[in-house]
Image 1 (cartoon, one colour):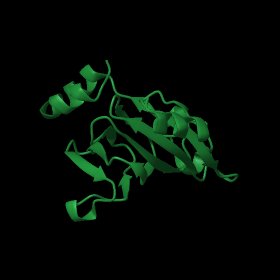
Image 2 (cartoon, rainbow, N blue to C red):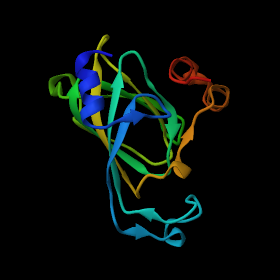
Image 3 (cartoon, helix red, strand yellow):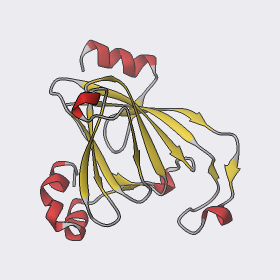
Image 4 (cartoon, one colour):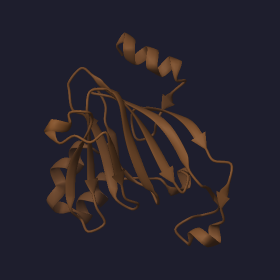
Length: 168
């Protein structure tokens, strides 16, 4: 890792994330939503909201995964980030999260609940520092990391991007 990446990981007290990259939870609301209000997609009560820092390097990627909640991405620093989304209808779209507004980038992006998504840094030898806000609050019980063969079976027309952004 270069010096800037090492400094960010150290100063923000970040840890490796199972999907790739590094993260640090920065907020978890005190209040909660009971499971019976959330419905059967949830295994228990969830906080109203959670937030993390997320750092991804061009040497890595965030593998396809999905959660039960909407996830809002916020761009902070570094290279722009591609967020790859396969929606619940099976349509694929690649978004650019960053500050190059003239080139169609967005400083903020919402990935709707239940969509498969992955991310990658746009520029070689760089990194992206973003934030992710999840509501209802994130719980690893709501997290599903994609199995390559299963996702390809479900979405064969997206085989190339699925192969590129899964680990198994």
